[in-house]
Image (cartoon, rainbow, N blue to C red; front, top):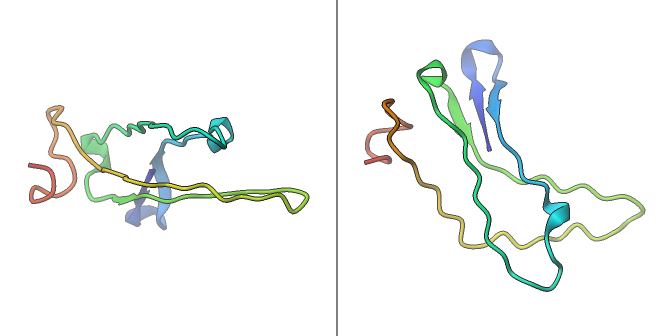
Length: 85
């Protein structure tokens, strides 16, 4: 999850990641990512995505299911008022 700054060539302005190497290959699990959105990120783009990397032709498949984006109020307006109410 990251924010991109359109005023700086869409460079990454904030980012948080999760290392999927820690996931079990036999047990479902839940995880939370958090990215503080401050006034400095006003006008930036919020991006969600996945990146899998492999070596020696190993499998890279991971199931990402039941994602639920949410937000909390911390004194700043987060994202769009119609989405974060």
